[in-house]
Image (cartoon, rainbow, N blue to C red):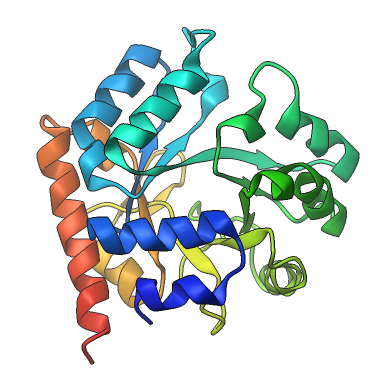
Length: 254
């Protein structure tokens, strides 16, 4: 189903906005800015911001993070028209994640449109995050599948993530997964571990190609090293954007 037709299927403001801008910008590319230097993060955003629908951050790995980082991220978000996904992977009881999300050094709920969590702790983790994020119109992704070799996010684990997504669908907007996980088009699936050629790294990360991922029913490809380690990140980002979006467009012509 076309992105613009899916907007009305969800009540979540973040999901609606993401689907709208994917259609407007003609991009289903997310950049994983997994860099440890703030200036490099900003430089990467300025280079590829026009090509992405989503910026994925790991805010706690940045060594020289300035006090006004949230303001700068928001300015870049408005300038280049993308949303922000903090890849925090919450994994604790509901009461703890509620404070990890809203308090501390980063106050993630104030600037990240989307966060994600493991479902190992049970539905309380969703409820704790929801208690903070729903009021601000934020969205949550559940880690239903992972791209690393021999991971345990399979079978009943994955199915339970889908069940809980349906139960909390005002706040849960989708999944981190390797393929389409449900026929309910209100949910988005985002897939990490994407490169132009299938491969693995020395820490058991497994890579699939953009066309394979989108053909499998995923909505957004998440690309990191394949873009930010390239000699020309902008040119490389356009390759990924074009291939992924054309695969999506062609699937809707059938």
